[in-house]
Amino acid sequence: MNPKILIIIPAYNEEKNILKTYNSIIKYNENNQTNYEVIVINDGSTDNTSKICHDNNIPIIDLVVNLGIGGAVQTGYKYAYYNNYDIAVQFDGDGQHDVNYIKTITEPIISGTCDMIIGSRFVDKESIGFKSSVARRFGIKIISNLIKFSCNKKIYDATSGFRAINRNLIKEFCVNYPIEYPEPITNAIVVKKGYEVQEVTVKMHARQGGVSSIKTWKNAYYMMNVGLALIITKFRRYK
Amino acid sequence: MISKSLTVTLIIVAISFIVITSYFLKKEKIPEKYSLLWYLFSILILLVAFFPNMFNFISQKIGFEVMSNMMIAIIIGILLLVSMFLTIMISDQKKKNIILIQELSIFKEKVERIKK
Image 1 (spheres, rainbow over the protein chains, first blue to last red):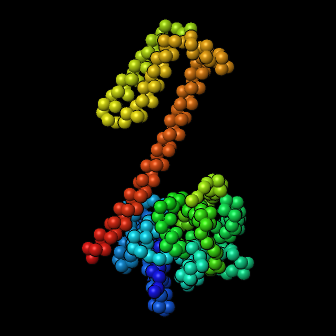
Image 2: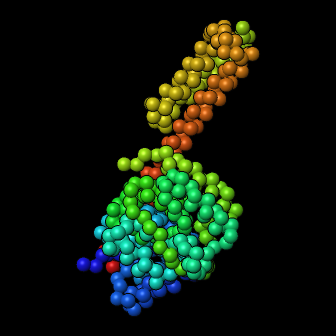
Image 3: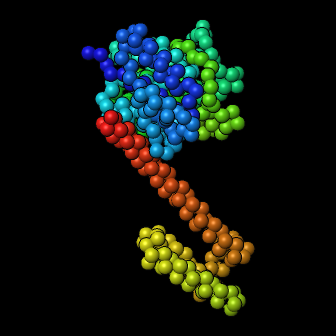
């Protein structure tokens, strides 16, 4: 039996990209006989994101109030849980992620060897495509070391929002998912809880429009918060 | 130790505090368990007004040069605790809020899907 796969696309003011992203998935389904289902989580966008989705029959949940990226993605996980999906893939609506790699990051989960796969830009030196700025890469390196400190496992692309998880983790994320800076923190927690996590090389593109949720001037503040959260995670006990 | 006029002022302040707290309690603006804290505040002020010498003695034993410094330090300490408590309450409320927003949004989507 084929597993039910849900692609969760959190979207905040992504009117320029959302339709393109959705169409790329539909086209991929047609060409590869896959059956990826999509849910867009509109996090209180002030532009036409919601209208575009409704006009084009794209499945969408409109959050009644803006929640922030973590709250939006968690809504997707709850939707996946209630509708009995086996695998949930977090996929950015801004064109950074490539639909061709969904197969790459879901396959180890389907075969049962892993609970979570992170699509990574840095896992090997030869990996291709967009790699972000020098400063951003340096920041990710620090976070990556902090994750190593908190859970004893190196995760190279610690802030990657391109992740696939199985049903057990969908259930976990429904109960508890950080509202801010969710990726690095959940990576560490999931490893600490004893789940099997792996990174797989994927190609990413530069953003095709819109503004990243991590703004430059907020970077120092971001690092402090994530750092603190990761250090606390080290000393927290998980069942 | 303290002047007559200060004693009178303190008593007025304490009574006003009691009246205000009771007013909000009666109007059900604050629950009983939080009003207790404000009553304790008023009682503390009354104690200072009636037994200044005792507080003076304590403050010198602890190492404050004047009693008023100790009183201000105590009040700042209590206020810090209160605001920390409020932070905890707010984040608890926020968590509940998020769950409500998520469940409502998922529910709305489902209703719209069924309507179609």
